[in-house]
Image 1 (cartoon, one colour):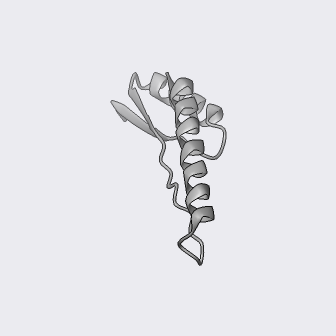
Image 2 (image 1 turned 60 degrees about the vertical axis):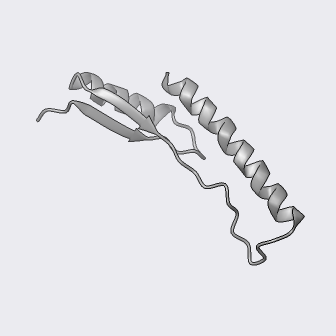
Image 3 (image 1 turned 60 degrees about the horizontal axis):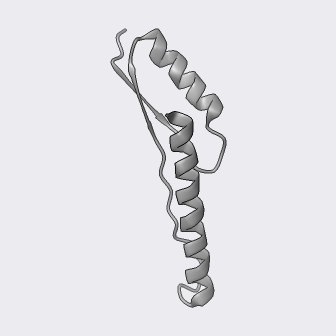
Length: 77
């Protein structure tokens, strides 16, 4: 079997190091390139979809996600 590219999903809400190490190991065995991706939704689903509290919670979650994506990027690079 030949692999030229391997893709690994890095979970936004859990540590990525073990998954990334495993993906790097597999990519190395096959001399394959490694692509990592992560995604998240900042929207908070509540019964009441309005108000300042919901907007603030969504803003905070969006900032948390952006920070975590930067951490994952540094881990991957």
